Image 1 (cartoon, rainbow, N blue to C red):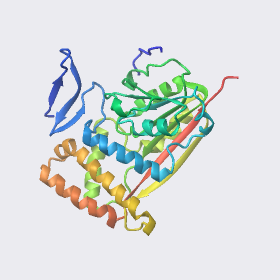
Image 2: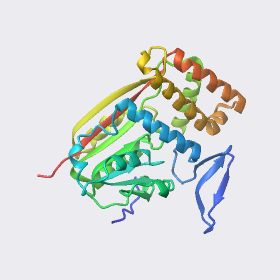
Image 3: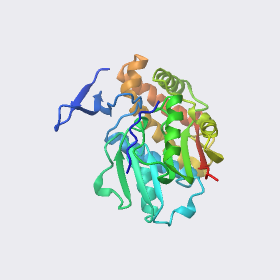
Amino acid sequence: MGICSSKLSENSDSIKSRHSNQQIDFLFIDGRRFHNVEDIVYPLPNDDDETDRLHFRHFLTRYIWQSNFSAPINHLLDDPETKILDVGCGAGSWSFDMATTYPSVNIIGIDISEQPPAQIKPNNFNFVKANVLEGIPFENNTFDYVFQRNLMGAFSEQNWIDVINELVRILKPGGFIELMEHSMLYNMGPATKRLCDAQMGGMHLRGTDPFISQKLVKFLQNQGQLENIEQEIRECHHGANSTKAELNLSKSAINNLVTLYAAWKPRLAKMMQISSEEYDELAKISEKELFEFDTYFKLVRVYARKVVDK
């Protein structure tokens, strides 16, 4: 396996490694653990509560789409030679689900965090710890399918362009790349809008784009080595206008957003200059608004095929 070595163009307690004098990759803010990696702007925690939220969000997302992917890769999923990469795999929810469903394929997850729990790891899954902004540690043309999602808050626009170039570099000719991101909220009540405006302000300060889902197609079109670019969109509603059959989904979507508010809290309450109690009250009001205003968001998947040289 080749190593790509070229780099792509608060109040807290830092934790030291027990094995060296080097600072390891997380810090604590108000009892929540966060990434502590230079140049990483990802704003959400890296702890057990966040792992639970990510697992829950995975199953919510899968239900909304009724699938784990949109790219036309079914012909690859019974082939033991198939190699799949999950970029920013986090808690491993998507990788584990795919590895269990398609035991013939080989799946690798890559993330800046420590690997998912080994005791529940499928035999056909492996983890590589790496910062994709420093290059993905695989040779050119390694993977048949590269999947990445939910990294809206992790990359600047230039980072997105650089990372997509890396994803295409390691993708085999004829292989597929797929990206999924979500929109910001629509039909917001006053409390919800206050929270989301603050979150968007924080994203702008970190150099990230809250509307990146609208640019994914353009990124793939401009990359130069991709063809058959497709986009699919789903909506996830939180309440009042949902049909009776959709109400359970709406309740799950509200629960997902409430846990996201909790994940935002250590950084966002400070940025908003409000107390912990004021933040909690705002989140409580927003929880009711999500249903009353039928707040919703869009999930966007884009996928494309890497050109085969003639």
